[in-house]
Image (tube, rainbow, N blue to C red; front, top):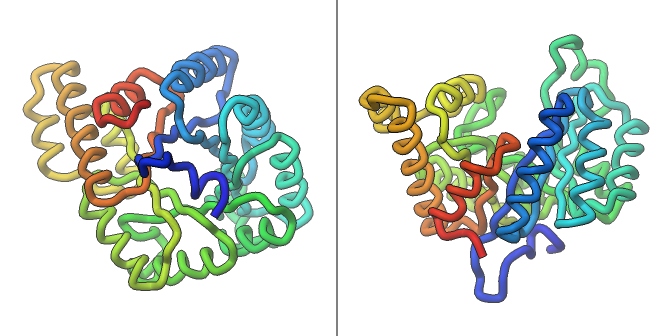
Length: 287
């Protein structure tokens, strides 16, 4: 148990953390750092920074990690699809130099311009990456968890066995993919515990501030949106009303997740502080 897995207060409060992604241009970069500074005002336990498929935004990711790590405990995402052991070890060293608190080890998907990357790379799975990080560094290692089953997995039982293998290889915490019901999380948790997984599994939650955007993201990720929420969106008479409904739903989901035993909440910010702060405050997570 190290930095991220122990990032809880003495009174056993749930952790609060935020996820960012590397900006694509100067305007996006300005928005990112403005949002980052605003979110630091509520004292998150840690933040994380994503990493593109096949290392497509590697330099931007490392640049963001380097700056954030100087101000708050930072988790650097790292994908291994299409990568060699040598090139991945180099990135691990750069994360170390940047002062990250942990690496979130992910397989990742093949980039669009190299669909055969997985077949060509030396590292085939996230488990391979967890093992490599454990050999090459003393950094803490986290992994992904899938409340609605990994798209390439036959069932949740298989996912849970893989999660246990990752924990046995050195992972000390997991963060979930996008989902929209408490049951999806509690079912995952029950399956993981039955497989012998003991590490904290932190739910990732998306503020629902834009109905069309959330529906699109859910479709791309394979996350199921409850009929109840879809019906609310369909009944909304304006975008503002749909936003109010969506944020209320996300807030109640967050509150219910904490009540169900979630060790913390990891908020996907999309590099915008407004909805992320609104959700964190409404759910009572801010300090």
